[in-house]
Amino acid sequence: MNLYEKLVSGEEKLSLVGLGYVGMPIAVAFARKVKVVGFDLNAQKIELYKSGIDPTNEVGGEVVKNTKVEFTADASKLKEAKFHIVAVPTPVNDDHTPDLRPVEGASRLLGQNLVKGSVIVFESTVYPGVTEDICVPILEKESGLKCGVDFKVGYSPERINPGDKVHRLETITKIVSGMDEETLDTVAKVYELVVEAGVYRAESIKVAEAAKVIENSQRDINIAFMNELSIIFHKMGIDTKAVLEAAGTKWNFLKFFPGLVGGHCIGVDPYYLTYKAEELGYHSQIILSGRRINDDMGRYVAESLVKNLIKTDVPVKEAKVAILGFTFKENCPDTRNTKVIDIYRELGEYGIKPMVVDPAADAAEAEKLYGITFGTLDEVRNMDAVVIAVAHSQFSQLTKEDIAAFFNPDHKIKVLLDIKGLLDKRDYQEDYLYWRL
Image 1 (cartoon, rainbow, N blue to C red):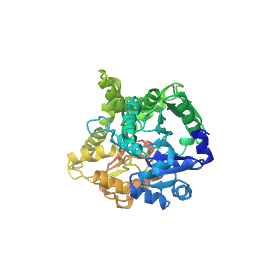
Image 2 (cartoon, rainbow, N blue to C red; image 1 turned 90 degrees about the horizontal axis):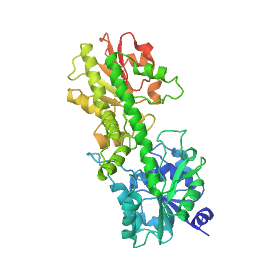
Image 3 (spheres, rainbow, N blue to C red; image 1 turned 90 degrees about the vertical axis):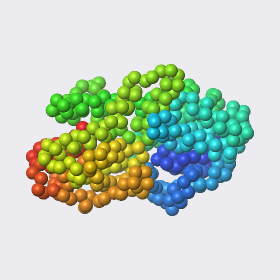
Image 4 (cartoon, one colour; image 1 turned 60 degrees about the horizontal axis):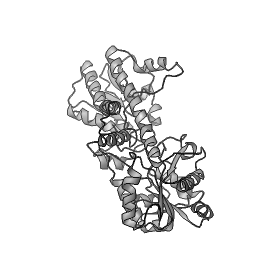
């Protein structure tokens, strides 16, 4: 029997290295079909999973409680598996250069516990060449094995959209690749066990790596265009959302919207591509231009809030401001690389310490990463300005009366920033200075 057949028969196991927002749903899905070892360095997270708690909210506690995944923080358990999927984050450093330490560390750990006949598939977003030029040498060094002889590698970019209950692992076409035809066939067949939408066989590992990194770069550039339009239309006194709704009636108009671009994908992946391009002597024009616009939107929102406070004769320094929402996207607890922090910090430059409320966010993570402690909606009272920064479903349920209660009743005009256009602008034309991207 080949490796695929041994996995299906239960003779061999599959391992998942990295059990975050991407790795956890993959592990759970495969555990319905084959034996799975779920490994993560974070022992505290592993204990939560063992207790039936899902801190990512991606699959839910009930699913975690009933899954057959063998959760462990013991790297030696990886020796029991022969098909390995690496799904660790690939962030950027402060200077926007790729931080490959997580994927390098995972390769070291895996190499130290690799057995002959294994297949390793990387899912982490990287620039073309990382799998073969960086990860393979580490695997060989740590294992003492030879790639192509003792073990094989492949690449299958993750396409999971955190917080999205429609576009899931099972429903999104999966790109797969392998170092040779035999590996490609094995990788494709293994993923076909769980991906109902089917797989797309890329012609090489580098092609698959490149495909992933341009998916998010394309979205980033399109959102940057919308953000630039928003800035222009505000200067013209035109509502951007109204313009986009009108333009959207044409069949081939791409329906993107302005917003804060954070998270560990769209706001990060383009830098991987431009870094590699710089290495090859090409300086990106469009991609980096889009990145500059999107990275600057938090400051732009904060400046707009300050200008609106001045328009309503509210003293800026020590103004009472509430920010509703802190995660990088709606209905997701993840606060990593959130751009709401840029609004918070920029307001601090004006002597404003905003109150932050986010019932959906991972509060412990936010305090650890940013030193911010959340308040509650009940505590949002007597405010000089309110910023609805994230379109959580909890905030979409707020009534006009709920929002009015947030403000200082002495203010004749209330400053309300609705970044994502969650509210109906017509409800806030009287007694409000309503602003949205």
